[in-house]
Amino acid sequence: MPKGAWQVSQLGIGEWQRQALERDKADPLASFRPEFYRPETGIYLDGNSLGLVSRRAESSLLAALDAWRRLGVGGWEAGDPSWFYLAETLGQMLTPLVGGQAGDLVLAGSTTVNLHQLIATFYHPEGSRRLIVADPLNFPSDLYALQSQLTLHGQDASALCLVPVGPDGLIDESDLLALFGPEVALVLLPSVLFRTGQLLDMARITERARELGIPIGWDLSHSAGVVPHRLDQLDPDFAVFCTYKYLNGGPGAPAALYLSPRHRHRQPALWGWFGGDKAHQFDMSPSFTPATGAGAFQIGSPHILSMAPLKGSLELLTEAGIERVRAKSLAVTGFLIDLADDLLAPLGVSVATPRAEARRGGHVALRHPKAVQLVPALKAAGVVVDSRPPDIVRLCPSPLSNGFADVLEAVLRLKAAIEALGW
Ligand SMILES: *Cc1c(COP(=O)(O)O)cnc(C)c1O
Image (tube, rainbow, N blue to C red):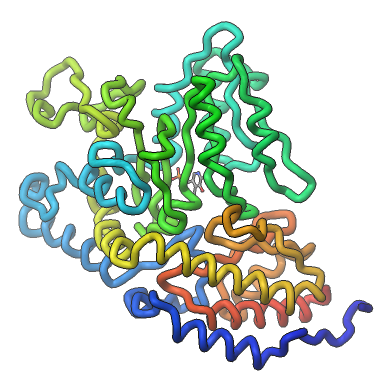
């Protein structure tokens, strides 16, 4: 079709509108939508960067503030929940979403700091067994942590073994497994790649690493809260994830750290008083007695006010049920992909996310040569999305706060923005 020619939908906009209405009406999670504040910036499809605030998260934050006001230092003991155990309490509240048992998960620091702690603990290069297998598409902070840890361990860049990426921007799991061998001392991968939204076959990869005795860690930042995980069944050595994306913990909310129960008595590499055995923490002894489990991997004081919204947010997610959240996410992202095929493909847009449900996370990546310019154009049109250069626009319908009609409206405005830019 020649450039600029009149584009018509195969299905017709009216039919898409009818479908969106019908699917919103049948959505079993529709009752959760009024729980969220809708931002004044417009239709919000950026929950994979920063999830929205719910009324429940707002009240658990205000409760923590109130405990500080009423109790002062007493909040460490008498806060509800007690601040002293808040990182562990919230870790336990994550188990219905990601698996594991009490004691396997804790809230601490940021994803990157937790990665430093875990890489320092699990990476022990010895002779030719010194490689770290990772992927070049991982979030840059993860790659920075790996590179600086290699330097700290007396290694150079040749120890970082990056899997090749296909011309479609995706990773073939067989290429990853081909790198696993006796020289590999650690594997660190993201569950979902932040650009394309590809979900890796975590079971296959973890199983192979475990067979070969290679320590493996996962970064679940782009899947926790939207893709169900069973860390207890998968049994990687460790995992980390941030809580401000699909877990709606708020900007800069502390990250989560998972430690396999196989390592419950392992000494962390980096010590601090909040990683200590709680029964003796206030003995103020100069010698360190670590807690058992993930708790030992904390370093300094937990960020109480930054963690507080998570309590409300995790209650909401648990009530919704992670399986229903995933079902809605797949339905609404599938609807988005169908819309893109029908309405946007004639304008030079292609879908970068794998189409198979088992291979995609919670967002959809669309490719267009003018991706970066489209984001401000869409913002002006009241739709919040983001881009990742050079050519990706990411759209993330959050299962609890977005409906099908939001997605249709965003696609129609995206279509208009591309037409206005002169594709
Ligand atoms: C969002 C994200 C991070 C963020 O790291 P912080 O240290 O918590 O800011 C790290 N890794 C991945 C894969 C992410 O998606």
